[in-house]
Image (cartoon, rainbow, N blue to C red):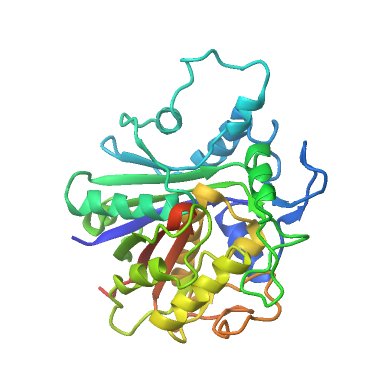
Length: 362
């Protein structure tokens, strides 16, 4: 069965999907130094403009999800729901007076199901920063096994004091801005955002008048379990993941990399790409919109799909001087030579996941 990405949408610091795409091509930054309570400096963050409420709050999360829900196509009654997230409205726990009595806080997936009108209360996938990619892979398996006729995969996470403090304690935050794969990179920028990808069969997508041309050709995951937070220096997990992806006829056109801008993550990815996909162009969107944690994989999947549809590889915003071995990193927009893009993410605990999107000729 051909599983397709029938529709997708994003909300990032650059805007909706069209605004995010155009911002990436123009090299625009949604990342800026931002004051955060309890942090004695201004870390680089990417916030969605127009949202009210404190960072990491349920009110802000609700507004972000409402913006995303407004971009959804009509959903069939039997649509299943998978939600990718890591911390959600975690800053609510820092409030001395909880806004909702204990025991009455609905699960995130159930709240999203209610918002978009689905009977399925959903499942939350929380696999660190690979959550979104893992959720898309799981959704594709549900379609292939006929466990579901359609699956809505939603990724969402907020910038929060809790998360910023954690990454600051790890000394993982960039000084001013994020520069993925750059020789002088010094850390990541955090971002908030939400995205969805609607998965179904090609036949059903066509009958619904949705896109039936972008296929999920393969998915893979592995865990190297080398360290709680650091990636394997030898890239063993990502190499194993990428080697499970069978290249389509004509080969891979590009890789949407995790590309956090930290020294060790980017070095690990460069090593993996050199060994498994030598010469294939790769890029990261995190220099422009920040690292959106559990939402990153779904946002980046949507960007990978747009890359195929538009035939253009977006640049790695913030990249000025590619590090040794990163000569294939995309600095300026370039044509996509082959309509197949791998989107991959890596997370704490050594987890790695990848999905291959491709346009198949009918």
